[in-house]
Length: 155
Image (cartoon, rainbow, N blue to C red; front, side, top):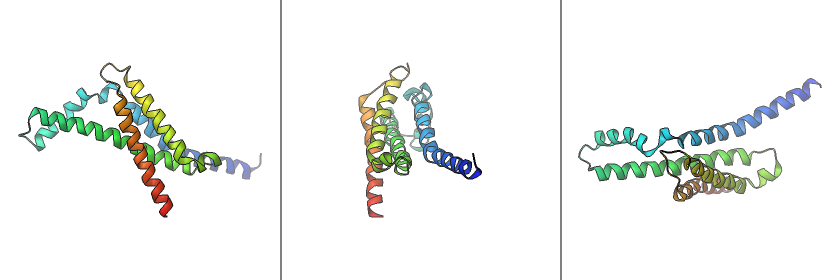
């Protein structure tokens, strides 16, 4: 093999890692966040004292509501990031089909991963699986995809 061909292969490999690496790392982070370490019971041990430190006169019901909303915002946000990273990876793909249909491929990944994430949580004793969380995940990812699609069309 000549050196130009080897350099070309190394460049393509580096480009794939650069394109898909952040997406795969983020998916691994989402999976870790689905573990027992991030159950509502464990996150409340961090958020409750923090919320009460900032707002010392809040009732337990309000603290619980803020904790609940924070967890739901986290669902939306982590999948919005997944949407951005998947759009980045697929829109720049070397595969013409994936590049042309980046929006649909990214949305398919988001839907499948959201459902898989909740399915995984059904096996974690300290977690509960919820189709509503999957829907919120998909809305977060879809929101990012729509914003990116509109931005790409404008620029």
